Length: 617
Image (cartoon, rainbow, N blue to C red; front, side):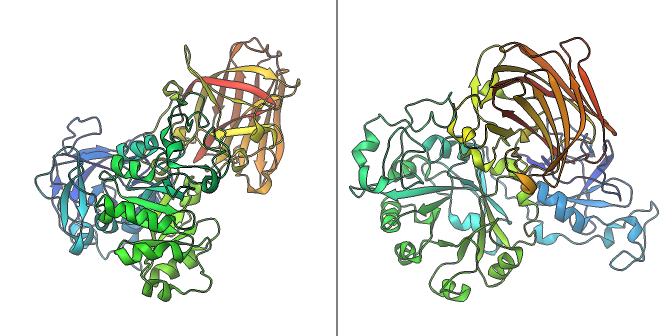
């Protein structure tokens, strides 16, 4: 069994100006001071490297370590800098740990620098920081399907997660911060709080899943978040007063097609007992108890299935944590800003609750650090963008990150240069502005495979309420390099008026972009509008204010016909071309304000538009 080091976005090698260094070969060393060179390493494709790893086109270091691999390696590019590389670590390493552990030769003789260099002008191994604290040898005996669990005293053991074993919460608790938790089972990838979502999260290797339980009219325990069933099923009404256990079992609940038109209509709202039986032995769980009495019911079912060691109980009130405290099950109190009202950190710990859940957008780093310093394990929710995760503390104060797509935010989802619309469902990094709620478009599978957004007329209530505008981040393509070409086919099926448009937004960072009232909350960006009448407009958006930097009138677009657009970003220009028509068919905007670290969004204004054959070069 080999372990992957570096991975998506991790361990990015940069020069003194912060630019990624590509194509640089380097050797790999064990992380102990004076450690030895590692030669038994492979590329991610499984090819032998001879002990040399070369940075890729984005400056990242990624390789497979040998059997019995250590937790940390050094990568030495021969320029006087040595980089710490950890297994499957990502953006957090690039931002923080690399900054901490990379020792430039220029630091010789400087404060906190090194006193001497060796004959090759490199930092001598004897002067490298000793990373023994993170140097934990993997034990022998592991096999495919096993999970590595760190327990008391930092001991490491293999846990085989089958129906006959458990994934103890204590093993999760001993991992390096932050842990990555799939909110409602990863609700950007599968219909939330369904068994299908929980299976997805387990299969993709989330550290844990979070799910919601709700006590219903006959005393049963549903897995569902809202107090009403309207949003995520074809039923109507209050969970607490209208639903019963037989209703969950009669097989007529549609809890899937609301998510996307390609999902089946026979997914049901699961009972908590069903979820425990299906995935309870495969992945640690955070059980969010949403209404009065749900906490005690959840604990009773957990104990009946003997899964006490696999779960954490979470609630907005301490009353719903009482049963779990009595049973010795760890508990988490939710408090949006983390300041607490009528309670103190010490009092909460004394009462038996050692976890605190806070809203990243309503709390502060100072509060997170203070709660952690007081002895609480802090979970932040619901973090769906890398731009929202990056400002959080990187000192270990964030115990866990709850996300609807933790693989994307962490940076472990596979990088793509093409779309994956053929899957007929959403891929990593496809999120919409908050105003669109759950609407992220439709799929039309065939040849080619289309994904689209419908803002024509009043078809979609959420888009209609947002002034006829909708967009979805295509995060799997980012961050974009400084220069690139983005190609795609598109069809405008319906346009409400001649200037209605499709939009391609290239934003600085991956925060949501909302062209209807987003204002200063929008990221800085270039926004490209292709209108039904053929006009192409290019805007630069700064502080939420758009400024025109280019326009051209091209031939009108006939509804229902396949068109092709090419967006080229050079060092100084943005060139937009309708490649399938004769000139005039292109506009060139000269501007170099924003480059690097950008993300694409596809949007619509009062049109029904679909995309296919997306390619980034």
